[in-house]
Image 1 (spheres, rainbow, N blue to C red):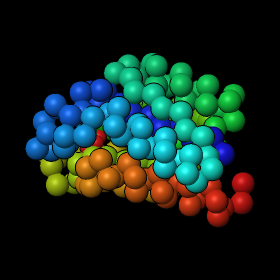
Image 2: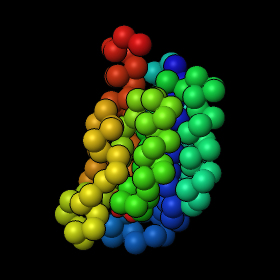
Image 3: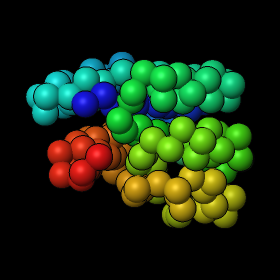
Image 4: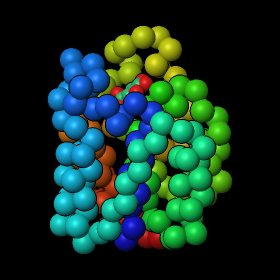
Length: 148
Ligand code: DQA
């Protein structure tokens, strides 16, 4: 199956960005581990990081045309702000998992609300780069066990 991994704003800075919160792993390392994890399970992975809401929305639209089966997304700060990104995921109706490196519930009050969680198949947060491994494992399990 086809999986798409999306990363929102500022995640291009992973490795140097507030490492006490987000860890030392770079985005390139996360993407490479994710690709290997999906390929080992017999699936294909595409990835995109963007600081632009529009680029992420357009990538989600294209995903439907490409027949992407599952999306794993860290919307980053757009988690707490973007009705437009939420609407894009609802519009294409591709199942998705929301993930975060940090645990937004243990941080500032404004991070407690997500525009995505109620539409997501599930949410993974709080495990640093391992959140990606766990979210992809869940996505692969969903693809392998749910009837589509
Ligand atoms: C984040 C949590 C968000 O609140 C924050 O804006 C981010 C990263 C995370 O992965 O922990 O940029 O999504």
